[in-house]
Image (cartoon, rainbow, N blue to C red; front, side, top):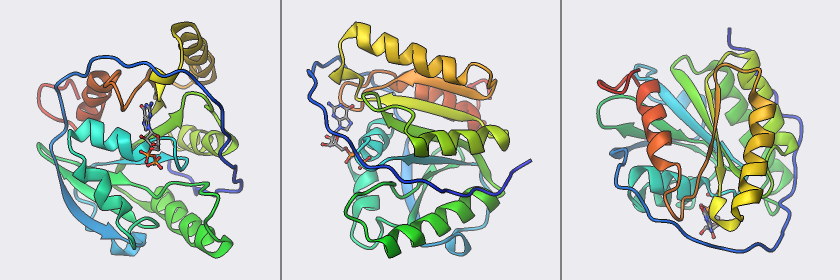
Length: 226
Ligand code: GDP
């Protein structure tokens, strides 16, 4: 049963200095086509296709993740176009289903008024969109499970919505630190059968294949096991 989503907390980005390394990219991608910018739920197209919503704190790398998964820099550029940053941006996926880029949260420079419009629209979409099939939560691996992430996860668990937590920017941590964070987040999710976590790097492509497989299965693509 879907429950009403009520965001109550905001957090601010923190800055740390970390090493950067890179890995080879893989070749798979989700083929998408921009469908529509919807300022609010009422502007969304009819809910006739399963939708995967992408959420994440501003600067966690949600745009870069979308670009990596779709193999196109154009994807997130659409969402970052002025006038669209506080809206829901919908993309059709070849083979069926949609990706929905939710506005990033916790942008320190956003006004209180802008934040409250954002909150209302996102709460409404998450609470009432019948076609919402799953949630991808993009986190910066150096700052996982912020208060807002926790709220969103808890809501998804209570709503029995499948979740993929992506620990993005994994290339910024050394192997040991990565594994430590992965373990911590896995522990947090271990009681949730519908939640998965992956190490991810939009920069290197780490985790991209597994994320695409899961998304395709959520969207019911043939051969995906979904
Ligand atoms: P958004 O605000 O969540 O959409 O974040 P962006 O995609 O705009 O990324 C914020 C910053 O993080 C940019 O400078 C990106 O180049 C950088 N970034 C995003 N993903 C990665 C990653 O996997 N590795 C590294 N090293 N940097 C990344």
